Every structure is written in structure tokens, then in C-alpha cells.
Amino acid sequence: MIGSLLIANRGEIACRIIRTAREMGVRTVAVYSDADANALHVREADEAVRIGPPAARESYLVGEKIIAVAKESGAEAIHPGYGFLSENADFAQAVIDAGLIWVGPKPDSIRAMGLKDAAKKLMADAGVPVTPGYLGENQNPAHLKSEAGKVGYPVLIKAVAGGGGKGMRRVDDAAGFDDALDSAKREAASSFGDDRVLIEKYILSPRHIEVQVFGDSFGNVVHLFERDCSLQRRHQKVIEEAPAPGMDEETREAVCGAAVRAAKAVNYEGAGTIEFIADASEGLRADRIWFMEMNTRLQVEHPVTEEITGQDLVEWQLRVASGEPLPLSQAELSINGWAMEARLYAEDPATGFLPSTGKLDVAEFPDEVVRVETGVEEGDAISPYYDPMIAKLVATGEDRGEAMMNLAASLYGLRIWPVKTNAAFLLACLQDADFQSGDVTTSLIADRGDALSAAPEAEDADWKLAALQSFAPFYAQSEAPMAGPWTQNMGFRINREDNSHITLQHKGERRTLDLEQCTDASGFSLPFDDGALVFRDAQPLLFTPPRFGDGASRGIHDGEIVAPMPGKVTSVDVSIGDKVVKGQRLLTLEAMKMEHGLIAPFDGAVTELNATAGAQVQVDALLVKVEGNPPAS
Image (tube, rainbow, N blue to C red; front, side, top):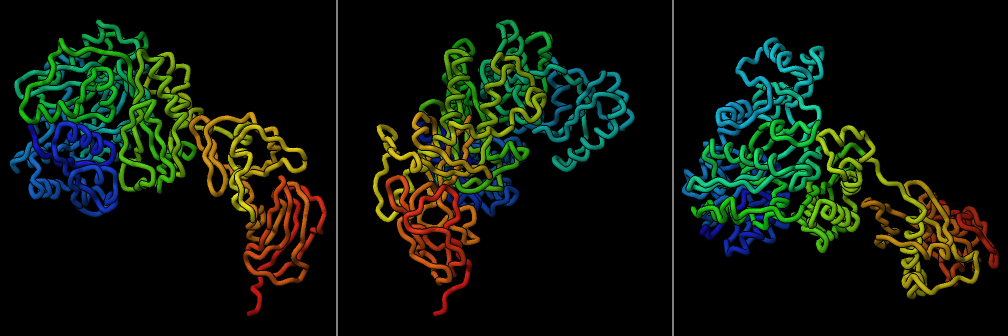
């Protein structure tokens, strides 16, 4: 068995590998860039070594540095995780040539499956059904257009060396082919240094079905059943599940059997995934599922397979790389229950899913409901240099409905702030009627337009909850801090209606709420110095009340001091023309049976005064105005 392992990756997959290695008694060595110096995977590994600046091309993608660290640290093996160098055959060979163990398939297997056209030809020869299309060497635009016509529109232009949806274009008719081809070739050249493309028949009701395969050095290959990854946004997976909805045993046997043949055709060792496209216009059928490509690595979504089979795939990887046979035979593997995984990203759906970076002041994961795979903890930062994944939430159940319910519950319980996330978008996807029925195609999200990505709006109940949550901090800002009755949230009655109000703001809207009418509010909320967070359908909504004691109001920067709530002026400590200094008391307001001192927000002079002792004032009434004019020394 491998005794020490270098992990040539970062984030949640590095933490995931470290966890299994620790359970197996394997020493781990992490590598990190300057951006990851304090990252969770660095903290959890037995040893961590810096490999360069933040940019991946100067750190995580420099194979020579990683191999040098492995040799210097005494690591026996390198696990590439996924992404970065995981499917780089030259790097795999360099690891082996350095006398180290490569935890992955043989370099020749990676090369065989690395180019989509060559892989499809190989699969066809092995008896694996492939999508109808053109895989030839002739890249003349006129010839490609002619072949597209033979395949029949709509077609899909795909980069030969592509991945992640890059260099991929759908074409619905001959008129749009030339522009789509030029665009696909430009993107392919930019992304992969190779502008060659192939042509595939575009499936109008596509399902993305993939099969987890595993091989060892003794020629054994098994499958660990299928996953459904059809819910995608711009060719990026959003929610994955296992098994696939609507998969009968005959179809499962056909597609999984084809996956095993595919792996055997390249003498595969280690973990891999065979990806298929299915025409689901009449449900899943064995004669309408075709090979797309093979990922020669561990997949992001591997936890759902682990959950339904009860197997640790990273442990399998380490055992196979150590020269052991597969832990189980095909007959010993079975499906138990259902699993779903949602990819939680630091991105803002409301702004076109732009990445969101910064410190995670709040990061509370509901790990009592789901399995959480993450590379961050509360207080860590989301870096702009790498993939913006925060975590993978993996829910299980006896059936699909229970797994879906548990995944939704985890999103409702998630608390992330102030980094923006796609949590509300994920919840909206789970609540979609077609998704819930299992009628999911790769176009579902696109077909919904902006409906799934629209941010939830604050409802009356959210304002009420924010009012209750926001009230307690006001006491701490008064001259005589005390435990407020609203911190108990029960048994409190306000005798005077005029003094039972609080003013809050949210996204430019301001409301004054009667606290006595808020006692029935319930839900998730968190107190903050500047207000309260209320979680509506997994979306954090920030409510900010005026601050007692610091003169905060709608015009604080202009020196306008307004009544934060209805009350009685008990004393006025300044007159028009008086010079004041920042923090000086201007007047005292009695409200909610407490006195609140309103103070000058900056040095200046009183230019307007609309308050007299004993007067009753309403919320937002302008009481004092201070203009900046520092007093003479």
C-alpha cells in the first residue's frame, strides 16, 4: 500500500482525498499557491509545500514543480484529483518516469480517449454505439458543411480536443453553419490550441447519462452503475443523481455493459467515466443511447455513486494504484437507495452567474442533513484565481423523492454571507415540475429563461422576522444596555402603540413595522451589527435598521438626524448655531420604554433644529441637521 501521497490539486477534491488517505493511514502532502497559503487543504494535510504564485499556470499546472516537491517530501505517489493536470498524459508519464506512482489510468489510455474523434472511432470498433456524425480528418469548411447536411440538422459542432462546452455550437440549419463553424474553431483554438472539430447529430430531447467504471492491473473492469447529469447550464452540470430516473434494468444492462467494453478497449486502470447521450423523446431506451466521451479521472459527481454503492472510490484508486485487485467483483456491487448532488458555487445568478469572491464571514453548512464536500470553512476566502465552487451538497434517501427533499432541506438551511451563491437557483431547479417528475433534459434550464435565476423577493414575513431579529442590537447601542424582551421573542406586550414600531430598509425600500404584529414571524435569520439577514428560499436578504446613538438616518452623510421610530423628545442639548464634535449628544428620544441618545455624526455646526423637550415625534421626522464645520481649537 502507498505510504505517502502528494495531492496535485486544491480545494474540496484535495480535502476529499486527504480524508480517505487519513483513514487508510496514508501520509499526505499538499501543494499550494500563494493564494491558497491558508487554505483548508493546506491546514488538513500532514505537510504542505508552496509551488508558486496564484495563477494556475505558474503553480498547479507546472508539472515539474509538483514532481520535484513529491521527490523532496518523500511522497511515493501523486494523485491529480480532477481538473488541472488530471488528464494530461505527458504529466502522467513524467510522474512514472520519475519513479513515482501515478494514481490514475495509464498514459496511453488517457491519450486514446483524449481526442473525441479518435475515441469515437475506437469505441465503434469495440462495439460501443456512437452518436451519428462525421469524424473524418477533412476539415475543409465546405466539406464539413456537406457532412452536416448528410447527418441532418440540427447538428452539433464540437471541438475534437474540447471539454466543458468550449468549442461547441448547435446549428439548426445550413444558413447558420458557416458562422457557427468559425466561432467554434476560434474558441477551440483559443482554449485547446487545436481548432479541429467533428460533427454530431443534435439530439432534441437529450439526457446526459454517464457510467462509473473501474479497472485494475489484472485486466478486471467493473461498472458502478449510472449517474444522470442532465440538469446543465451552458454544458456545465448543476445537479447530478444516481441512479438515473426512468432507467429500467434492460437499458441499464445495455449502457453499463457498453461502458465496460469501452474501458476494456483501452486497457483501463483506475477510476473513469464513460459519458453517453440519450434521446429521451420516448424515455430511456437501449437503442437510443450513444457514446460521447470518456473522462479519464475521478469525476466531480463521484459522491453520488459512492452513496448508492457504499464504496469509497478514492480508496479504490489508492488500492489499484498500489497494485491490488479491485476490492469487489461486479456481482458484489448493487444499488441501494438514491443520491443527489448539487454544486454550490460562489456566483450571482441575478448578474448572469458572475463569480463572487471575498471572505466568508458566515459559512454554515447543514451537514446533519447532507454530506458536505468542501474546501473552505467560515472565515476563509473565495479566490478569484480558481473555480468558484464552495461545496458539493450530497443528499441521500430510500428513493428519489426523499433524496430530493433532503437536498432541498439542506439548501433551506444553508447560510453563506456576504459572498453570493447559486443556492436559490439550485432550490428553484429542485422545485421545477419537470425536474421533480424526472423529465429532465440538458435544455431544461435554458428553456426556462430567467425564471430559475430570478432572486427571491422579500415578503411581509421576512420584514417581520428582520424586525424581531434587528431589535435586540438597539439595546446594546443605548446608554443603558439591557437584555431586550425581543431576544426572548415571546410573552412581551407593548402598552403604547406609538412606541411599538421599528424602521428597516432593504434594497432601497423602507418600512416601519409594528413589532407587536411581528410575533408570529418564523424562519432562518442571523443578527448583524448593521441589521439582520433573513433567508428566503435559500437567498440571504439583508435588512438594515437606523442606528440609535450614532445619528444614522437616510441622510447621515448630510448630517440629517431623523427619528428612528415614534417617540417622545425628553431633552434637547443643543441650539441652532452651536458647534458640535463627532459623538456629541444632540438630543434624547424616549421610545419603546427606553432612552436613546442621538449624536453628531461628524464635527460641525447645528443649522436646523426641529425638536423641543416633551414633544412627540413620528418616525423619520427630521430633528436636527448638522453641517460639517470643525470647531476651532
